[in-house]
Image (tube, one colour):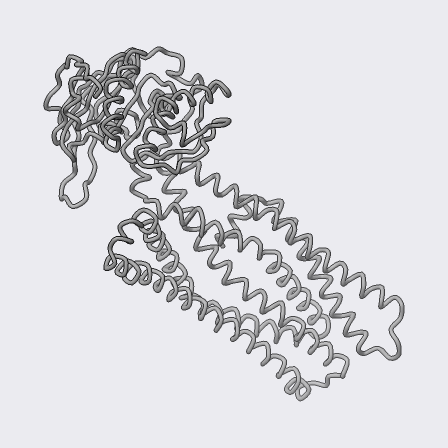
Length: 550
């Protein structure tokens, strides 16, 4: 059982402790059955010893059950946190290209729905273990009362287990199909959050989205979940029917076969009736465990898929490049290729030969789809090159030092994400520097900062990009890359960006690469690099031309 292997691997001590507590609870329950049967068939008033024994067994059953549940409650929450941290850590370690291929919906379902299903299953384990122990103890008591009756009960149990397995086998397939449907449903949820403006502006699209996307995917999940639960319910009630049949045989057939006294008959019936509740609880837990097994397999498959990729977050012992001055960055015959949607062939970038130096402002230009953003991701180490070499200060960049290499870059990509805090050493000094930049970027009336946390990021697109630029400034790294930063800015801030901010970074001996279409400001660059269909078609030096403010 996948869930059991997972529990044993994550916490063997917890499994042993819970099993012991459940067995003690089952032993107490078996003792209670025997004691109740003895009290019912006893002549006269029960003695003090019987009362004390009843209290002790009842208290023991409750305490052991509670201890098992408390242990599992602590373990399940710790496991949930550990699973999420483990999965997030693996996601952070995987190259960007593989994460893009997996897709955000699969990752979100694993981090939310799947982890929740596993947590619910671990919380159900004490109940399952106690019910199993009660059934085991009751079986031992029945065997002590009458071994033939025990054999009959065992035979019914085998028949029930086999038929139960046959009935629910197809249920597992429906659970897997429902889980696959969750991925599609989360994809549509993402469309809702990312495309809310377009949906509000287009009634037909909105209705089609609700009817053809969300409702259709939700119906598939509902269909398979109901089909699985229907099979579990039929199987559970079939076993209840078998138990009632066993009681009927004990009541009406057993006396015809052999002479059974009233005391023994009472013991058989009480024990069988007492065990019906634990049996129902045990069978009901199996559907929860089945869902958890499906989710756990999905998480493990995702984890294995992630782990199969080379980790690019390795931390070098001496944090290579952290203290070395940046001298030059060389791309030598660098290639990269990937599949582009709506096209039959793979897009190939390169071979690229390019050198970037500190104190130099380079504009990367070219048409849409020419490979500018892909080249930017290769330069920054987000995409490893498929061929050629990247060398920083003459040191070859590979899997062993790529994460160290990436720490040399501060970027604002076109699809950037703005975090609500800055991460920089210096404490109060970082806040002071951030406030200075807030004033320079005309954001001081919109945003404040305290202990490195912004008061808000709910700003216009242009203002958010200015705040992202502030974060890049605070990082103070040797290489800056901006992907169409000025595209959302008004004319005033465009001119400030090209004629003041970029030259200021250059004067600080930073290497600056800016992807841009603003040909009016090409004269500000030291060098223009034009990319066309993945190839550098023109590289020429430009003489910086000051542009007066108007």
